[in-house]
Image (cartoon, rainbow, N blue to C red; front, top):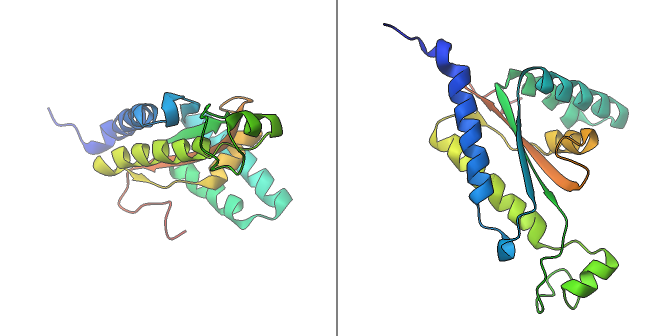
Length: 175
């Protein structure tokens, strides 16, 4: 039997995407509070994401969105990672500029741990892609569209997308 790489490429990319999701989930979180939402989109959902990115890019005259909407069409899968906002309940922190988490919650101040935890989760996820030699790029432009479409839910306030591809040249760089 002979199995050429083209035959199992998509399945292998999806396997790596799933492993990326696991890495993001198990990444350390401040005080163990997990506010991270994670998903994978493929096929027609990538096309829907691309179409909405293009609409937003044209409406806002945003070159990055107009460019990235084309490059994600070359992805076998896109990993979506976002975070909700919630103070983590520390008595003495003040890194957000407020006395404590109780004061921060009263004023609606963003807890610095939420985007920090998101960054750690994203770093963990892309390290898996890199370890498996799957081309990827962290894209805020995909994240803007994820929020617009509410793909990760109403409560997610910051998101990023990570398109994945296996080809002789990474389609997400030198665009």
